[in-house]
Image (tube, rainbow, N blue to C red):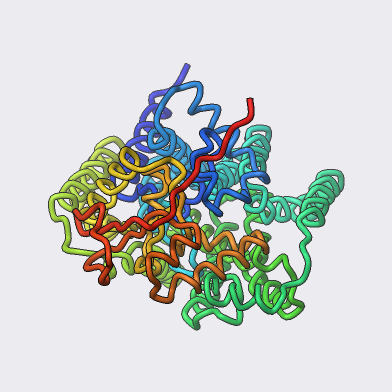
Length: 537
């Protein structure tokens, strides 16, 4: 029999997931452009002329097999499958946080409030990585299962924890490496030598399999221009401050867990994750000095996200226990300070301040209402204090307004324009056509067009992130990117293999009239006539 308490907790996590979906979810605005294009081409072959699809990092994961299996079985759209996977990753993340908070001998109400705090604080501004991604991708799905594995282990469900960890490793092996190493360390402390030996052997084989040659001068130049966040020498000073501050807050939280009846194994596990996160920038810098190819592929500095996870996941429960037990005010104040740091640095404040266009007040009002109603429901289920109900509803509604300031990288008007352009391209131009966006710069709309129109792109900024993984692609992307940065005639684009040139805003003078001019986009056709590749029977 499922207890009423379990039903309440599941309902709270479910509504929290829907709130995250309503306020944070985005599709084709970040790296999901890359994965959607790779999946679309594997399923249909429509992007075979696009360099992005010539090499795929999905070969290292089971993400594509799982995605395409769901797509085939459910006969749903790519958008629907992405929403489904996004909800799975968020539900796994928040369930792991709830189980972790519940293992600290706190009341159910405190664990539920911890989920809400983490939900708002799940945005890590630097170095270029989110704790809870706003899109469905291998990394975000794996991260959700890793958080679930930690929570299940804290709840002493070790078999399910290992299953969640194995799922994360299948979806995104690189993300699972630090967690596997931390388990090996905790196992050594517990004198479980077999477990530690197996994990260290498996991860060692994986790292050896990913070995790539040293970075060449050209590849290093490309990384410095396109993905400088993988090179510690290119980090901004505030990123380093973020890592050190979050590490200090995480160490304090970990020291406090000994006072809240936490599992020694889980505390050791989290402590190992924290130390890995703190030393990862140094490891990354040493590898960078050695010109190791593991720097862009493995990106050791990404482990710096784990101290932030510890502060977000365990911090609220520690605060609650200190305040609940009325311990020394100094300790409570330090815990609150750690959480304030987490709120300021890890929420969507920066995104809100940089939001494109005018605020959509109707959407913000809906977000605040949903968030306030959720906290009201929690307090009503677990408490009868009207003062607590009002205070928590107002507080969380205010935080949700910050959260809804959003990860959106493209305004609603721009989305409508590019969607209309994509519909025209899909219906009126050949499937083998190649498009160029000369004045797109570092915007995301060329990649959005690629998936919506199912047409190939000559080169775009976001796909350049694949330079981290494939040296040959990096060289070709860099050559094309530099070539497109120079203003050229339509004849030159035709000779380079481009069929249509797309300009956002007023276009430069052309000898021929545009074939499309609407919604802020103008399209000119080159003299090239694409020829669809023949398929042998």
